[in-house]
Length: 365
Image 1 (cartoon, rainbow, N blue to C red):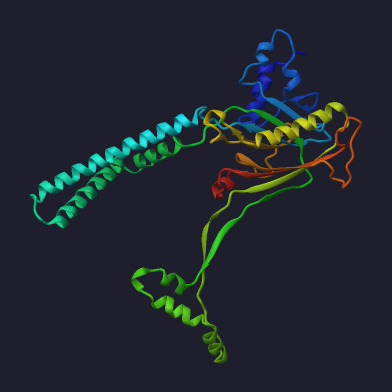
Image 2 (image 1 turned 90 degrees about the horizontal axis):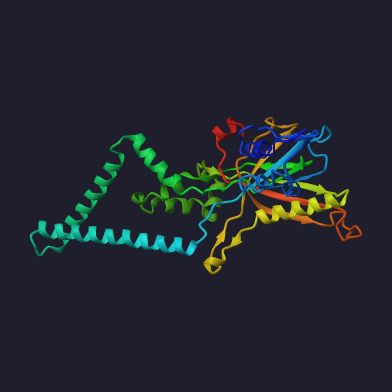
C-alpha cells in the first residue's frame, strides 16, 4: 500500500503544533519519516527534500507506540528566527534611537523658545524654566490623551500591537524525537509569597518620618524583648503574607537507553546529539562572535495510543535547560565490541517559557 508522504509529514507537524492531536502510525508503531527514509530515491525524491517537511525524526525504543508501549513522549525542536546580520540590526537600532533623541532635542528647544517668548525675556530664569516644564507636561498629557482617545479598546490594541512586534518569532519543526514514557516525570509549580509587618510597612511611607522605624527598632531590641518577656509580653509584629508572583514551571525526565542492535545504537547516539544540539546556541560568525542565535524551543506532547493523553496536564513551549548523559549508569564502564556503551541514561530538564495561571490550568495546562 502506497504511503502519502506529504500528508503523513504534515500530520506529524500538525500533531506537534496541536492541530490534530493524533500521531500517525505504521504497523502499529508511531511513525515519522527517518533520515534514511527521507533519502530514498524515486519519483518523490524532490518532495522529500522539501524544506518545509525535511526534518529529522528519531525514536526509541524500537517498539515505542506498540500495544506494549502505548505511552510515549514526543519532543519537537523548533528554531528561533533570527536576523542573519545582527551587527547591521544593532547599527540600525542605534541610528533610530539617535534620530528619536534628536527629535526630543528639537522638541525641547521649541518648548524652551516658547517659554522664553511667553515670559517676554524677563530676568526671572526660574519663571522661564517653570513655564517650559508646564509646556512639556502639557505635551505629555496631550500625547497620552491622543493614545487613549479611542477608548480602552484602542489603548489595549495599541499596547498589544507594540508587544506583538517584539515577540520572538519561530520557524518550522527542525527535529522530532519520540521516547517511551519514563518511570518518573516530576513537575514543579511554585508561587512567591513574602511576609511584611505593620511597622515595617509603615516605616516605608516617607511622610510618616522615622517614628515607625524607631518604634520597630526599639521593640525588636534584645534587651526590650527580654524586658517584655519578663513581664509576660511578646511583641507581635502583625505580619501579613503578600502574594508576589509565580515561577515558570520546571520538570525533569530521565530515560534509560539500552541498544539491542547496531541500528538502535546509532539511533540512541543521534537522539542524544539532537537534544544537545537543539539546546545549544550558535555563534554568529558574521557578528565577529559577539552574538548567538538562541537554542531551539521544544513542544512536548504526552501520547497514549495515537492520541494526546489529556489525563495529565499539557505543557506550553519549553526551553531545555540541562542535558545530562551518563554512559556508565551502573557504576561500571562497559561497551560493545565497537566501543558503544551498553547502556546510557539521559536526563532532561525543561522550563516553560510562558507562565501558567488559573485560566491556563482550567484549559488543561
